[in-house]
Image 1 (tube, helix red, strand yellow):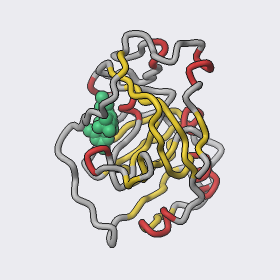
Image 2: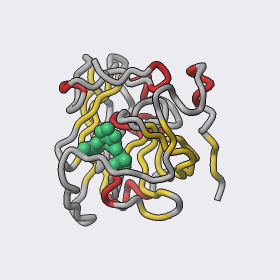
Image 3: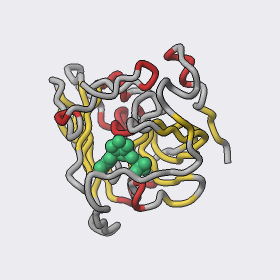
Image 4: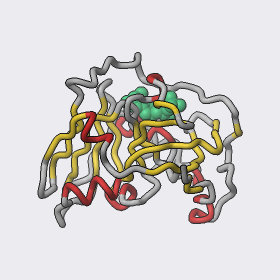
Length: 198
Ligand SMILES: Nc1nc2c(c(=O)[nH]1)N[C@H]1C(S)=C(S)[C@@H](COP(=O)(O)O)O[C@H]1N2
Ligand SMILES: [Mo]
């Protein structure tokens, strides 16, 4: 299996591999606003809505058939820990965006999840090949508490920008704020600039 190494992304932000104020951990702590939601592969649907040519849904089987890849990424939590060298397998955001045919006036994206969580990013921050919809972690199905069956990872942002249990994306023509962004976490969330709170 080929693995693309994305752990040098900090160079883009002119920073050290370990962002300021972070400490490295070998553990993979779990941070969720509530309990892990149930999911049923038979009825699960992923929806793509909003400012796109083709609003559509994917069944679990259809989603798993999308072209996918494995990347080695670092993971930075806003509460101060970073985990290096996570192997994530999944579909890139640009792959999904291409299938949807994003409208010209789309500028922003809202991610939604089975537990009611939401998070937002400018479209430009999503159209990167390191923003992944992930179903495998280190070669095994993503553990349920870490967002299995499907989560987003955003190695250029603090990890709250990556929705666990993600089941939809909406393309927006105006920016909106997600769950934590409305409750005091930074809307921009750049770890190398320590954008933790707003
Ligand atoms: N659906 C959902 N996604 C979520 C969260 C959540 O509560 N629900 N928590 C966020 C936060 S604050 C962090 S730090 C990371 C934690 O991911 P982990 O539990 O795999 O470490 O998930 C993010 N994604
Ligand atoms: Mo977090």
